[in-house]
Structure formats: C-alpha cells, structure tokens
Length: 281
Length: 160
Image (tube, rainbow over all chains, first blue to last red; front, side):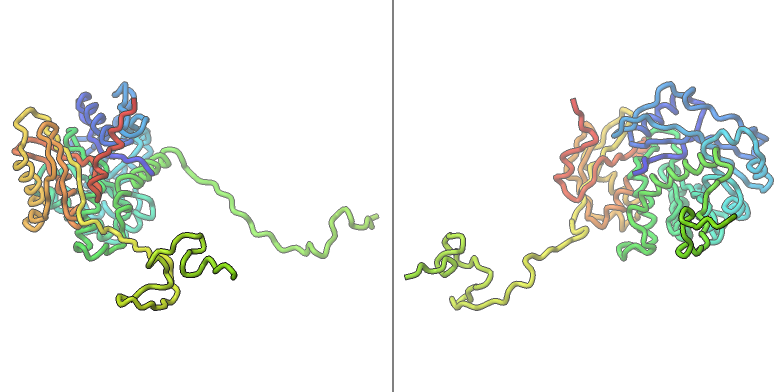
C-alpha cells in the first residue's frame, strides 16, 4: 500500500517549529511530507528562489511510526495566480522552478482554472477553501485534468480553526466531488502547528464524510465510491502526485517500441534455404 | 445364525451405540412416530453478514498540551457532543454516543457509537480544534466493531 503523505506544510522561517511539525507528522504515520513555499504574484515582485535542500535544514529526520524508515521531505512550490500573465513564469524554462519536486498552482478565476487544467505543466491545482468559490466547476476542464494526471488539492486545517471556513471547506469539497466523481483528489493540511495535524485515517474519513453527504445518508453510495477510494485521497493519490512531479523533472520524451505486424509470406510452400537445389549458375 | 449387520438398529457402522435423534435420515415427531425425511439438500448453510455489528468502538485520546485543568468525564462527554453539534447540528448532537471508560490522567477514552453514526462522530472529532479556547486535538488511536479488539494495539507494541 502506498505510504501516507501530507503534501502541504507551509515553510516558515522558524526551523524549530518545522522540526516539531515533522516529528508530529512522523509520529502520526506520514511517510512523506512536502514543504510548501507560496509565491503570491499580487504582492510586489517576488523571485523564485532555489529550494532549500531538506538535508541542510534538518540534520536528522524522525522515523515514521510503524516502519523503520525515515520520513521523506520534498519541496513544493505554490503559485497563486490571479492574472494570465503570471503563468508565463511556468512556461519559461526558469532554472529554479525545475528544482522543486512538486509544483502547484492556485487559480483565482475561472479562466485561469481552465488554463491550469488544460495547458499548464503542474502537478496540483489547489482549490480555495477559505472563501466561497467565485466560479463553478465545469466538467470539460476537470475531465481533461484527470486525463492529464493532475490532482486537485483540498486543505482541512482551516476547517479546524474557524466555523465559517468549515462551511466553505465542506461546500467547496462537495461541489468538487460532484463534478470529478471523487477521483484525483488529494487532501492535505496547511498546518502551522503540530496540533493542527490530523492522522491519515482521520483525514481519509473526511473524504468519506463528503461522499456520505453526497449520497444522502444511508441510502448507499451514489457514485459507487467505496471507503477504499476515500483512503486513496491520502495515500495513492499523493504518491501519484509525487511521481508526476518526478517525471516532470526527468523525462522529456518517451520512446516505445511497437511490434510491426509481419506480412504473411508463403513460407509453407518454400523450402528452407539449405534444401534448395543449387541451380544458379 | 448370521450376525446381524452392524449398520442395523442397535449399532452404527463404527460400532458405537446409536444416539436417539443422531441420524439425519430419521427423526421423530413429537408423538413418537418415525417420519422419513428426504435427503438433505445441502450439508451446511452459510450466512454472511456485512456490517452487522450494532456498535462501533473508538479509542481516542485528547491532546491538550498546555498545563491547564483537565476535563472530567462529564466535561469530556459534553465536549464530544458539542463537537457533533458544531459539525452536524442538533441531529448530529442527538447521536447516541457513550463514554465507556475515561482516564483523566492520560485523557484517553473509549467511545461507543451506533454503527451508522461512525463517520459522523469520527469526522466531528477530527475537525474539533478548541476546548474552552485552548487548542486541542483528538487522536483516534483504534477503532473496531468489537470491543475486544481494542485491548491490543500493535502500534504501541514494544519488543524488548
């Protein structure tokens, strides 16, 4: 089974807080986390710095509870885009962007959501949970994103902090799940404190809650989703996102061989070469 | 005189004394009459029950890092019910939840909930953030439809 991963831990300047966050995540059972660096283009011009290598930040990584391996730390970049011109950064082959493991985009308008799902080269599309969505999801861009292997990300920490945000989180999550049928969803925390983290099975239960609400209680699951698919929102989808980021870093093209269909020769009638009569002069 | 066949009335083929009512072929009506049954269609019947357990049990622990006053049993139950009310409203708060055990020292408890309400209770505990304006977190350690399964925890197993 794929290990659990929490793909959004905001990277602050305080190293000790990050270390305690990592220890809490390892104790809860997450095998991989991603340190998130957020770039907001609305503020004054920010440059994309090179990601700090996790091995420099943390000399010793804690061991995941239940296994004997250390927790894996990845780097992630989130771009908050509210204007189509901001996406040019992604298209340009800036050297610093390539160094991040996972790239996510946070679209603020419907047009940008469409662009992010169809053309942009990202791994995750973040869905806003702290306010009412200014646009409705439509099926064509969402289906295209699912075909391309892009995942939608939902955060759960705002739901813990505030009750109005809880309402927005659940309503946005339900509208997303209705359109995408529960596929390609990743749930992550944006926890700043260790107390805001929740265990992986608790988070999987949250996606199961959305499914339960959609299916109107005990009438049975409407979309045919099961508890296993709810658990996938935390484990296999996260692993798929990490692999998607890795392929973006490495592969530029794919070569594959195809067996060419052989033309049917009249082999049955001809004799093998050694038995042919040597009649040529 | 030939010896009677061993399978006749007195002895089973193995030589044991035949028990009354032990044969599948012949059984007695209440009046004592013998009736001949048709051979049984199947030798066993298997019933598979899915989610037949009435209750689900959860072992939870409340994490309150600051050194303030710890909640008592009644306050703990009120905390659980208020978490349900915040997320699922009055109908959710009416969910039958019982606190079976509670340890004030470690703030861990075993809760029992009706099986159809497990997802609601679990999600309400997950999304609870504050207790009396203090930050807290619920950690669900184990969950099972059987109470006996909560007695052992392989995650906290320590092998010397």
